[in-house]
Image (cartoon, rainbow, N blue to C red; front, side, top):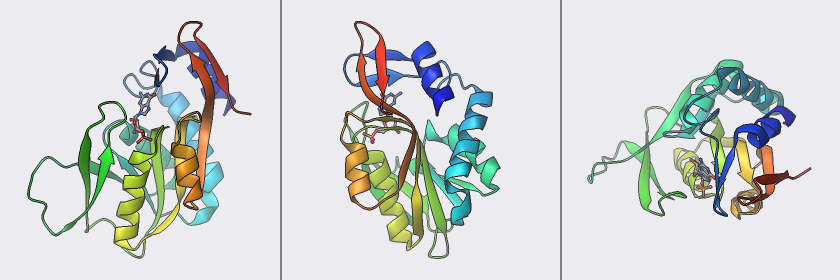
Length: 192
Ligand code: 5GP
């Protein structure tokens, strides 16, 4: 998506070799007009697939998922980062390793909101090593729901997540795929 790539070039900041910050427009301050276009693009890609639920992970996926869900006319579920030790039996759970902190945590979704009748689109802001998506995929499979695919705003294609998730047979559509980035020169190259 050219508009997103242009915005990343203009307002994104590179931190070291691994992290791209998009706080100015995507996951701290949010440009709702741009995210509206992102939602429409996900609808163009997945609108014919019978999606009836959008699933994301707290926190930074939620806003993008909500605006996307307006294009689809379906509800959003966000997997919660579980804070309590005793996991009740009425939730699906998966483990996710945080890209930014390296810690492993549980995510949960109530069984009330996901089941075998559901056709699920995953939405997230970034795809790096793929742990967040893998956790969400696990929740969908625990629920016996149908996974339609994953819509990602920014995939860092030089990290292994995209390859890992696609090799599982999951359709991943990333609107901007970063091929390389260099903090010293602030240059970002996108995949064609
Ligand atoms: P993964 O699980 O694929 O390794 O990482 C994806 C998650 O980590 C996303 O939900 C996102 O919040 C966060 N993340 C990964 N890479 C970046 C990055 O370069 N910048 C920002 N802002 N978040 C990232």
